[in-house]
Length: 336
Image (cartoon, rainbow, N blue to C red; front, side, top):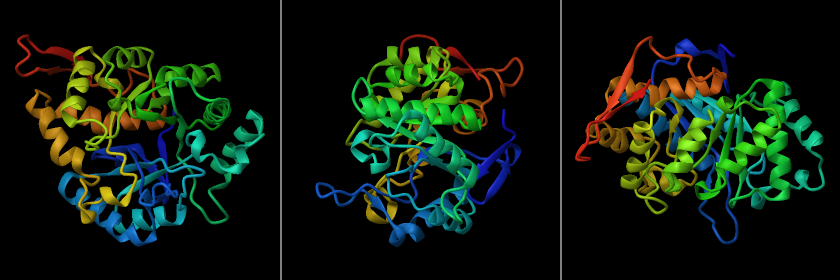
């Protein structure tokens, strides 16, 4: 278990993170293609990004962002350092490979061992000659219900690198699909479920799949909050309440996955703060109290990043009740 977080500006004590954490975001990336020119957050957006984070630090106490732009996604480690320093918000950076459509040439023909060695070297030596050190593996991607052959290699390599380095691993599951298959690949490579976060599960309207992932010990990421063109927040809230009611409050991560400049406030989007401004008030209205909110937004992501097991960090004897408004039944208690 790690007691320090590896941020882009240096080691940070877990105890120093007193406010909420955004568990899956992008601050600098370039996924633009001929068919989509707007999927980017480049140098010209850095001031706006830093400004949003600084405002969230002032208004909501935002303490940390987990930035999951990895190899082949147009990442900019130097920009992450600048944004972190200018905003006053700590940033944990990722490494790994996204889904196959964005695999760089280095993946072609490379063995699992070679790919794992690449990630381990980056964790140990940093991202570039003067670059910061990754503090998490991810977002390791696949698309569809089953990962493709190259995705199996990159996922397996990511898991082996996580085992070797002690870092945890976050995935990209395209539209929420394939999370169970990802978990199988990652655990088969020796990575324990409590060090795995399955991404974009709020895009999958399948409460049974969410329960299965959580029961296995993995984190279930509801990390596209506010992306209404993919899924309504009303549906996200319903899915989240179902998972909480099933007793899996300690297996949920929340974030917005801002992945293009059109999502920024200055460009008319909902911004990094949507989860605080809009979604959490709706969750509170459904019965969540301060302890549960702190669990979902701070203690869970810290346990994930540090590799603590599923019972660490819970107040002794504490349980948080989630009352489902208008459900016609009493709220069930969710462990915190």
